Image 1: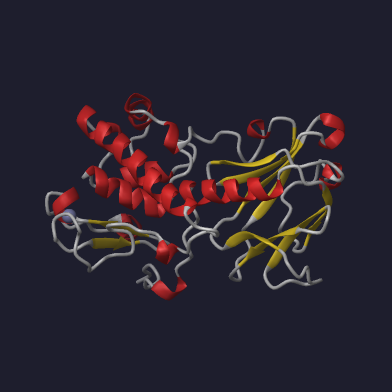
Image 2: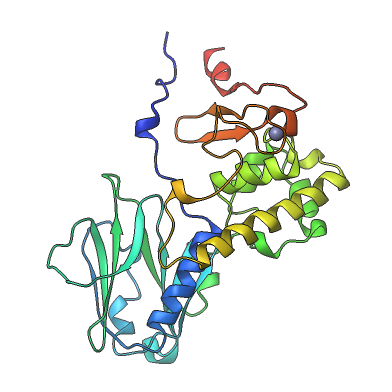
Length: 299
Ligand SMILES: [Zn+2]
């Protein structure tokens, strides 16, 4: 009988950086690159550039207006590009992508995906670790929020009050953990924050999002704010993006360890590419969650 491939932690993908890591990264890049003039942009892999028009060359010889973030994307804007219509490079790092200063500017940099060079020398290199090349760059003109890949993203996770959050959850009759990670519902939350937010709020990751009560939604809204604020403060204290191991938390990647709140053992439910972690005492009235997605296929 066919079954899911056995879970192999070694094959697990690196987690995608989330709102706090990308926000702090955008702020560092903004400080470094604002007002620098773009001298060249070169994709170094076939998969790097996701758009055919406008040409990235339309941003040449214009100055960086700033580097910002929307959801899990970084935006490098050139307001004077394309004869004043504006050009924006929208970058999604996916799991293994990183934007770094490119000190030696080798012809074939290891894991290099794309390179921007600026006047007076400095260069920015997009690298991506791993075999699967999924990081990408979209070059868009005009309002970047009005075209792919940013069009249709939900509101930023750090800009939600309980009322707005409640409206969003009411429209999604699905597991809370999945709804929190759905970028069209709420932008910026990934696997780690979803785990930590559910734990902080004392809610089951498998709770039906549309059926949460007012008090539960208020706890959830507070947990989202607190978890993001703490991670953002940590990221801003650093000079480079943290690795997933360095990010603090109570449940994420802590299965088998003691919950710091109640001393119960943290549990996890394994999926093929990610893990839902939780504390039974804090979140599920002691109930052990099982992955029941398999049974649908075997029925
Ligand atoms: Zn606990």
